Image 1 (cartoon, rainbow, N blue to C red):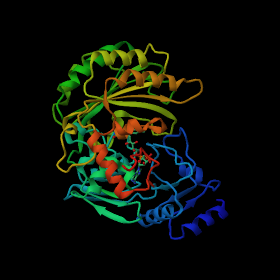
Image 2: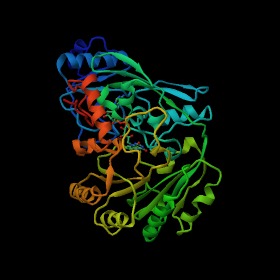
Image 3: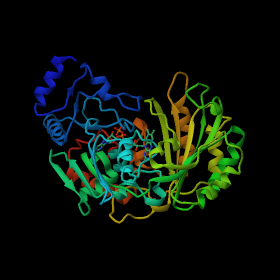
Image 4: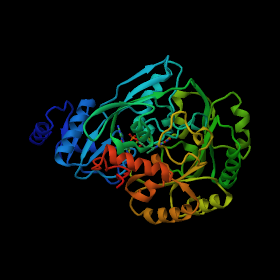
Length: 453
Ligand SMILES: Cc1cc2nc3c(=O)[nH]c(=O)nc-3n(C[C@H](O)[C@H](O)[C@H](O)COP(=O)(O)OP(=O)(O)OC[C@H]3O[C@@H](n4cnc5c(N)ncnc54)[C@H](O)[C@@H]3O)c2cc1C
C-alpha cells in the first residue's frame, strides 16, 4: 500500500474506521472494480465504509469539499463512472439478521443475495431475489427488484418495512411507510442518499419447481413462439423468461451446448402442478439439457445460470406492454442464430403481482409492463457493439412502454432513459423531493434525477 497517500486520506477522513484509498494506492484498483468492467471509474477518493458512521463521515467530507458522491457494492450496476468524485464502497458491510417470526431480514449495504438466500433457508424462508445470487440485495431492491417469484409477490421494493439511510446533510435516518423519503428511495435509489441497511420481507417458499430447458438452434423459432403465447396465459405463480445465446465452444460450458446457438427457457414456479404447466414447452422438441424439477430455493441461482465472473458488456433493455409476433421476428433478425452479431437476447415475463399497486406506495415505475426485452453483448476486439445496439434500440424504441431502472446499464443510459423509467407524475414528484433532500445534487453519479427548479 502507498502509505503516504493512504495516510493523507485518513487524515482528511480521520474518523473513518475502514480503509481510504486514493489513485495510486495499493488496493485502489481492486476497490473501484466490480462485476461490470467496461468503463472503470477513477474516483479521487474511495472510502471503504465498515458502518453507517463511516458513511456519514464520507458524506460530510464530500459536502465540505464539494465532491459528488457515488456508491458501489458489487459493481453489477455501474451507472456512471465516478471520475473525480468520492466513492463509498459498501462491500465490507455484510451483516444480516433474520427475524423468522416477522418473516423479514435486516441486511446491511454490502450484502449479496447468495448470503440472504442461505440464511433465510435455515428458517424455511426465501427472499424475493433475482436471477443472479452475486447481485447486491440493497441496490436491487431500491431499484425495484424483478425477482424469480415477482409475478406472484410483486417487486422486491414492495416488501420493505424500513430503511436506514444517510442523506446529503450527513444525517443518519430511519424511514418507513408514510415517510416521503421512504417512498422516494424505493425506486429513486441512490439519488436520495446512501442506504446503510434495509429490512426486507421473506416468503415461506423453501422449494420451487424450476430450472432451465435448453433447445438446439433448429427449434429456436418454435420455442420462442410457444413461450410467447404460453407466457401470456401463465398463472401468476409462474415466473419465466427465455434467452437466445451463442454458446462458445469451450470446456467451461456443458458439452451439449458448446458451439451452438441455443434457446434457454428459465422456469420458476411456486406450486404443485409445475410439470403439467411446463408440458407444452417440452412438447416443442427434445432438450439439449433439461434441469426443470423440484429444487430447494438455495439452488435458484442455477435457473438463469449467469456467469459469476466480472466482464465488460453493453446492454439495451426496454419494457413492453405486449410482445407481438412482429417484435419477436425483428429480434430474431437482429440477434437470432442467422445474425452476424453474437449477442444474447433475453425476454423476461413481468406482469402478475408486479402490475398491482403495493399496499405501501413507492416510486417504482412502469408497473404495467408485461415483458422486459434485453440484448447483451460482451465487449471484445472486433465487435461492433455500438452499431448493433443502435439498431436494437431503433427497432424496440417505438414499441417500448418505458424502462426499468435496474436494467438501465452503464454509461449508455441517457437522461431520457432515466426519465422513461418512471411515469411522468412519479418522475416529477421524485425531482421535487430531490430538491428537498439533495438540492445541490451531491448524489449525481448515478441514474440521476436532477432536483426540480
Ligand atoms: C448478471 C446480472 C443479473 C441481474 N439480475 C437482475 C434481476 O434478476 N432482477 C433485477 O431487478 N435486477 C437484476 N440485475 C440488475 C441489478 O439489480 C442492478 O444492476 C443493481 O443495481 C445491482 O446492484 P449491485 O449492488 O450489485 O451493483 P452496484 O453496481 O454496486 O450498484 C449499482 C448502483 O446502485 C446504487 N447503490 C448501490 N448501493 C447503494 C446503497 N447502499 N444506497 C444507495 N444506492 C446504492 C448506486 O447508484 C450504484 O451505482 C442484474 C444485473 C446483472 C449484471
